[in-house]
Length: 401
Ligand code: SAH
Image (cartoon, rainbow, N blue to C red; front, side, top):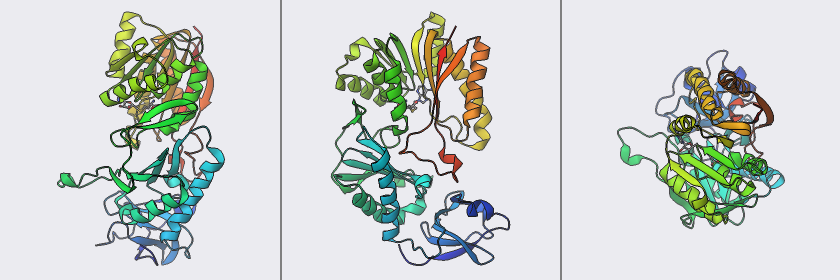
């Protein structure tokens, strides 16, 4: 795909402002006329009364019709374009990411590459495309990743593209896009902690890299805290961190059976005997309720649930969900204990999340002190024009009494 735009799409009056301000999305309803027969991935110019505003790629299946790639009318979307953008993303990581061989190489919109995510695990890069409009460009993106990430043995693809419901067979499957098959489990090292990653069957691309610095923080905070509980543990990143940091007994709970199996292996990888700890394939809410009834108390509780609000309409429910989850967590937190609580819902602001925990504390009659407030690491940068990208909140509270 290269050369000039394949179509010009007229914007509805007054909808150009946010685009001029740098936001990368054009919703279907912002277009004057829905284009007919334009294929996914077509490079289009978005225009206002015929005048160029921005250039992007078209997606006929998504509520976001166009994702913007450039505001420069002279910039073509060709192989060199993808190379420049991926190289720019790689430069940030070279400068600012240290202490790990697993990091996010491309973070979508905030790296000027809407819908494109690339996570690097040692010698394997995992590419995730979030729009059908990217599939015609996949080859060029893979080439660009190879060029910008020396030492790769392979690029593995795990698209996240909604497909036709009638066409179940076309459900996107993971596959090698270039080079070698990835090993069954890739061993990565994050701030001295070893973690096994299953890029084929794991969630997202295999690991939640955005919590890396918070896992490191938990390792530091765990000293002298004997009993730890990690709710929504996935493959046990926070659990291993707590155990390495000094927690004598760590409970990991997640509904994902394979993730819990990998969590055990991750303990072994770090010279920790899983038999000294507990692993539960269970619903975290139910486990918390049981522990509460049993009167069990923990000196450290980590709560990192999946996004509660997947749409704007779901925000209110999500806030109530955060309040009740944190209330359940506080019910098992010993006085003097620490609560590490996170939210990855982009639509829930830091203030709203803070207030949800405030409500949980108030209703539980528990006195808390906020001792740390964290966001996302530099390999998950945020473009100021794209506030949706500023999604991760991680708060650390100490229970006073
Ligand atoms: N903290 C983890 C990432 C957690 S992602 C890390 O550092 O790697 C959220 C996890 O919540 C997923 O693993 C998902 O399987 C799990 N999950 C979703 N709903 C759950 C529930 N009701 N009870 C327990 N786990 C749940």
